[in-house]
Image 1 (spheres, rainbow, N blue to C red):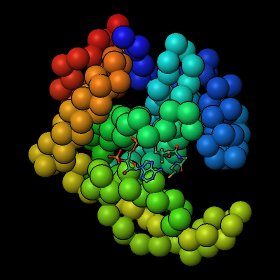
Image 2 (image 1 turned 120 degrees about the vertical axis):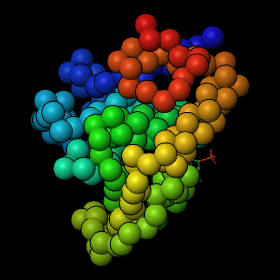
Image 3 (image 1 turned 90 degrees about the vertical axis):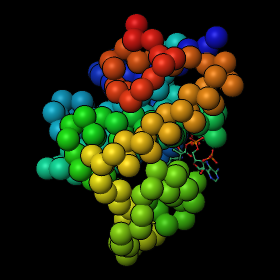
Image 4 (image 1 turned 180 degrees about the horizontal axis):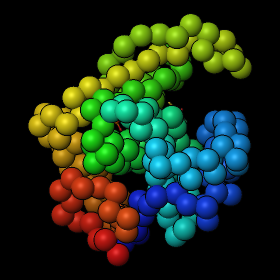
Length: 192
Ligand SMILES: CC(C)(COP(=O)(O)OP(=O)(O)OC[C@H]1O[C@@H](n2cnc3c(N)ncnc32)[C@H](O)[C@@H]1OP(=O)(O)O)[C@@H](O)C(=O)NCCC(=O)NCCS
């Protein structure tokens, strides 16, 4: 079985993070920007690696009781395999652990795949920011997921975990979670 690892991003992953940022977002943040996130107690940066090779990552800022998701990117060679869902699940699980009550983010209005991913986790459109993206002048949709601490939300995360786990099993993959980023029930995980 192939194993994939969910882990917190630290300095050792920084060169790969910059490379994946370039591939997924055409260079969104600088090295200094990522270093600030790594150093900030209010930022959560999560990676998916295979054999120490970064294939996906995500980040949120904890602002009072709101998790502001700033980035989710999966390497194009690994997209459509359920890994975007895994990163989003891990971010929301960590947001719950940090006692966040809501999650929010901005997404390009044309980014159908990302919007569809967020809708599957019950994010709803809360507004629109006109000409938010300087490069294209495109609008951003503001998506919002309330009630993170409710039983309904916890059940939704468990259901998503079961879907993801089944998908990984079909792909003959196991998941390692050495930093214990997922707290939802995870019967087939190893914490080594
Ligand atoms: C958006 C992104 C993170 C999705 O990652 P992924 O690993 O492909 O996502 P998953 O395989 O977990 O798919 C999750 C859901 O997203 C949606 N989705 C993903 N790719 C899609 C596509 N090409 N077309 C339509 N829907 C898509 C589907 O709803 C999918 O659910 P399903 O598998 O049940 O149909 C990935 O496409 C990406 O990194 N894009 C570039 C960076 C980006 O735009 N990030 C979001 C910025 S807000």
